[in-house]
Image (tube, rainbow, N blue to C red; front, side):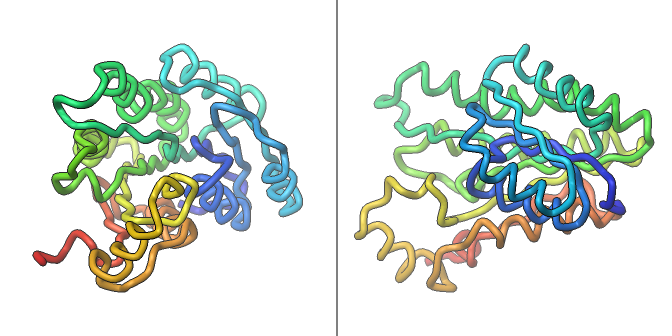
Length: 247
């Protein structure tokens, strides 16, 4: 896909991987719609607008179907197109089978899995009309392996690569690509709950490259998956080698 003058929806776009992706898209001439639970302080929006592209912020609770539909409709009404969808919104979902609230399980599916379904149902018709589009889902390395005390998170993130594969096949005749990325330990506010000892263990023992990733590392791959029109149905792992090792 040629990016200049396209329009992208980036959920979870006001911070972390979403924000880094929005900036890299804007640098390539893409108009940006930042969709997040809260509008934020406007600093990122101004930074993107300074790059010479339009940018709007849409506040929406994507765990609710009607909010997903409203967000996409708002973007189309204000920016006139929906060419790209990057779903980076999400939240932690700690707990084990016997030590995890039932509400955590259902809410995690609402924001990580059901939101993708509703957002795609709203956005894909606009892409079909142009016979071109790109969808990228942000999963997690946690969805590829068993994770202690994060059963729900591992399950919902593990569902996204399969959703990606199935939808990619379904939309292939319309020249719409669907791909997924699975980041490992990326230094965002999502990692702020880690203790100093956990960070040390990650860097020294769990990550073969012995460093945490940056949001920009993931954003670069997302850009590639959007621009390369011959990649679809794939899941790219960005984790410093964490999930490829045995010990």
